[in-house]
Image 1 (cartoon, helix red, strand yellow):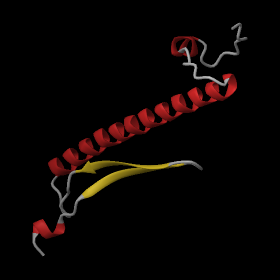
Image 2: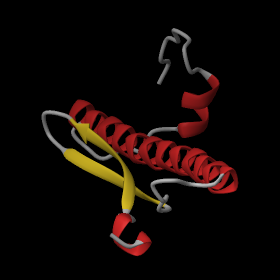
Image 3: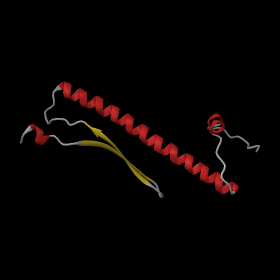
Image 4: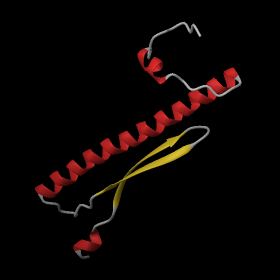
Length: 102
């Protein structure tokens, strides 16, 4: 087997599953030979770390969007009309119990 035949495309994936939606996130990884040099290993691990960070960012962005959509649907159902959530107020009061005075 030649070196090019022993290399296979690798990919880092994460699956998100909920009762209503599923999503798979992908991030390509560089190939690594069966007997990599120290420099090849260091480069691969560096790329892996960057890929994990990117995948985490992608998942967080996706979940933040879904939470925003869910919050807007909840407000629509509660008021019977579309009302935007005040994101600045939400950020300021995150984790706090606040009486709504609206």
